[in-house]
Image 1 (cartoon, rainbow, N blue to C red):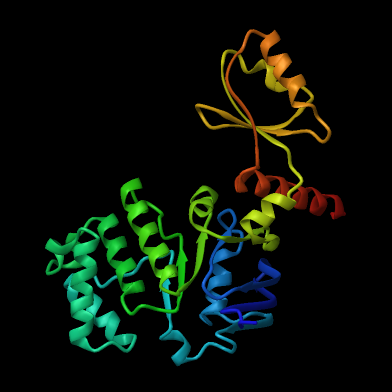
Image 2 (cartoon, rainbow, N blue to C red; image 1 turned 45 degrees about the vertical axis):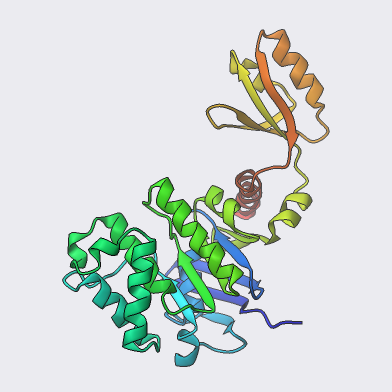
Length: 309
């Protein structure tokens, strides 16, 4: 059995009285794309910093490529931090070559690869500009190039699509999938669960500093035990107050409905038609990751509140 690329065992981290991560265990299989998901402040970035040995855990163990993080280990990792940082007065291509050299590339190789990536991501004509002359989105793409330039075995991307337009999100997503096909392992951190559902094979969901879900997406959905409907309709939403509806999320053109345990969806359909609603779509479906997370995180919050004295 292949050794997981990342293995966390009951790691904990607090900053003063603030508990950032508590008893988190997690394994990232080689060659997979895993989403580290949760709301802002859930502990995702702190977890990544412990993986990279930027901060140490208060308890528990962290292994990357089978052992502690070393200088050699770091050369095999590409890390895109949530807080972007570039040398603003340095030329774009020079900066990329510099980062490549830090990861062990020859300068000529780094320059060649940098110009190739800039061309691919639509920045070829800005290669000799200073970074400060680029827009925020362009700078983000430059930093993404710096992350993948040396072809790392492990990519750790913290909110990589934040602030990008849909076309550039698709472009970077294509690169991430390409890197995985070439053998890279990817840990993708985001609070935008819909983004993760489009790219990830596995998820680890964190809420309130603790893990609430972990595993392959198909298995997570299959074991969720939630019955869901997708309904597109015209008319009053009054029928959504029916006892069969445990939750309803409005997506604009359609609504995602979580059914109460044992509820009959046909009873809900009859109620909708009785109130004069026109149904354009009424379909049973698997729950989205977002709905699963909301249900699990809500259950965990309720249990936590119930234990408070």
